[in-house]
Image (cartoon, rainbow, N blue to C red; front, side, top):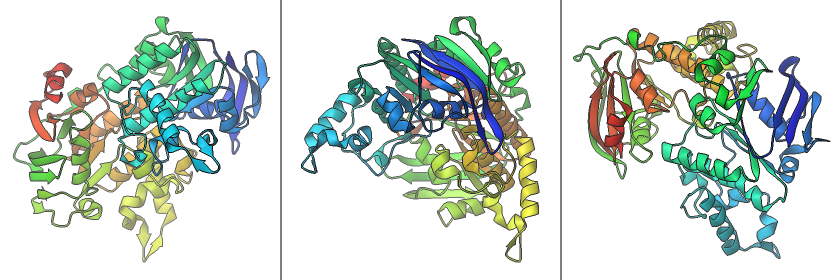
Length: 501
């Protein structure tokens, strides 16, 4: 139904895709995997008309086709759910769902809001999202916005009589399990009249949903196979050129903490309407996991500690000193770094270079008498690029041009370079491939061995259990249970889940 034939793409003389050939057949899900920087995002942008191939061509139903921008792709039944989201947060849900299609609901220059909202409810029902279509998207959680993205793509059903191709770029990266189950159920239902390309770093999910799998490495297709014939270990080896580490979370490197060496003390911390009177301590070199479903208060707790949300009451003490001024600047000065869940919005300055982003939180390190020492800045960046295996043309490359996973590594490097003694990691491996995740796990063990303390909210319970020394389970704004997680005696996922819901 859809095919790329010997497609290549170059940017500034650098080949990103090389002689790519991929087929998508009717009524199937094609899995697409590769390391960060393997070329997946560029490939998806070619399929949606954002980029044009330098060599090769696309075919629809066996006929060569040129996709003249995203609107041209949509007209031919191709839509995409973006990992970083294309939602405009200052518009309502309904306005986002039918952005560019307002004429369908307009008469004499006036929008028929009743008709627009009714159509929006019909689309939202497809993804089991029960929200007011008039709600501003800025008021939705990341997971809800992701489901709106999906509903927006599914609206193509009513726009075309031909078969659909829906591109799913890391659609589950910020979803809870219930939402993931809903997504997978919808994909299976829609296979009767649509085909999908499913990009994911979660190999178990990819194998569960896909019919066939393509593996990209360094801009080339290195393998293609039926999903039934693939295993996680084999795919990992094809992607990164080495087998999956037998000790994925590096549990043997987890060092015991001195219970009396407290670096962060929280007493009676409250955020009105979210959580009330929370008490806990963080020890030197400890990874403290905060588990809970969306709405439990775990994300808001992280943001309060980082100074991004104002507390209603309570006290935060860092290294024995009461944090009197509450705000991001005060938290950074006290030694608290924050790796946000939404990297694109809060974690990076995309139009600055890799080196500039890495030194932002400690700019005094690379200035002298008010002047920037670019050589010193570049040397610092080159060191972190090597340590975290960041794929970039160099330290002067714009961060905008890096893949999502490599951007996340730059965010981690920024706070590590700032010498933060406490790191709040809010879903730090979201959008990273399995090889890059191993690098992050290695870094977590390395910095905690050096005395840095970590507060972690993770993509999966498995990841949280594997990395944490202790886990606090939040439910309805309270700590429902606490678990110790020593190496070799970790709690089971089911132990946490029964206290989460």
